[in-house]
Length: 121
Image (cartoon, one colour):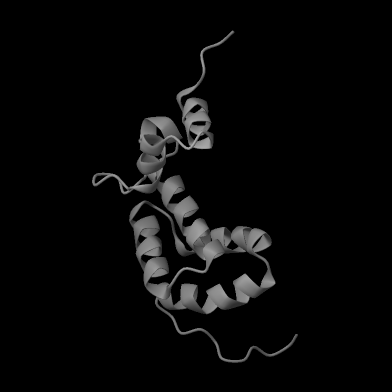
């Protein structure tokens, strides 16, 4: 039987409510800003920052949290098109109410005023 991967082992410990594993996942490291060690996640910095942004959008995070996450994503190599793609992808999971609530905050976080009323096409 092959050895259990580090990530699979972490998931197993999280499912068992292992306190140190939960703490490792929830508390960001001071160096990377990422909760779990990069070796566990296997994701590059840009991908981690985009996943972080998507999670914040899905939970309805504040404008300031979105601004911080977009700045982190941009410094990690993501452009506005990537940020918009993350928003559209997360929208399918979040649902229409969350999309409508989050879109203006994301617009503000990206540095532009959201449009008031959009004309129907």
